[in-house]
Length: 312
Image (cartoon, rainbow, N blue to C red; front, side, top):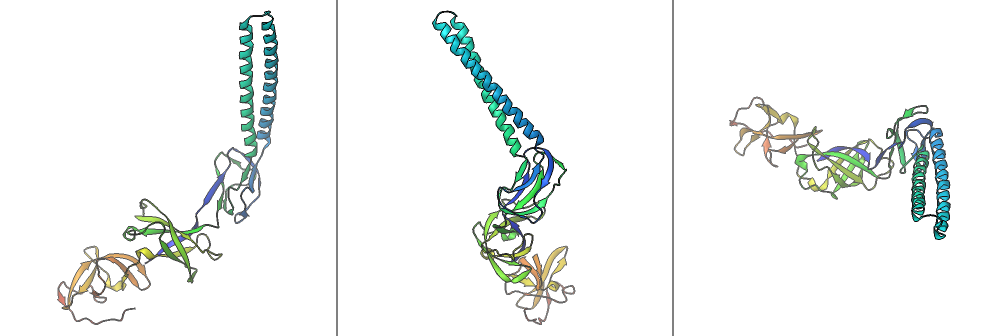
């Protein structure tokens, strides 16, 4: 059975700034190939640079106060040795020195934060890949964490396919699969199941399965439609002409002719429709005979004279 999927990348990174600000430059376009660390977009760094300068000045002021406190402690210790002042006066000076040390550490930490924010004004690619989305232009004011660009890794390509629950038995991570693009059905690619969703989607009741392509080439483009065939869940496919499938009391049914030539209705489960007919996933066994014409005129237990039609 061939399942239809979409070609995707394993890694799709949404890039955004860690600070808010006004964009002054965009250096890439959709479709641009980028390298890790390459600048994509820049923010106006005037305010962050001023904050960094102020933080650096605070560090210098704290270090000056700390140096003064150290000198004062040294003088107090000499005076205590000569019995000119009390021990309590020295203890007070030493406490002030500890406070000055703490202020230096605090100022340096704040300066490091301000310095980081200055560097955060440049949005850089976090991986090699291609830019698939750009959501910002120069002059636009963006917020922290807002998605600015999307980068897709083109080296790790896979196919996302929805597998019906009836086909999940026996399928596991590491299983092999064959993949064909709808754009070129002559060429076959080799795939391996990389990931299986732990639960079915509520809309389709199917499980999302990601099949990594081992031998993807330039012909494999993101977003293409691909057919996936899993070797581990291959089985005899029962495909009947669409004219053989009918509705009896609102349920999919076929008329099965037994070896004595009597026709009786049987409820079946219809699967995918193909060019050759409709696939029956349950209710029929290989080798059974079904009616493909006049299904609306038959009665239960009616004797019929089969006229065989060559299988396609």
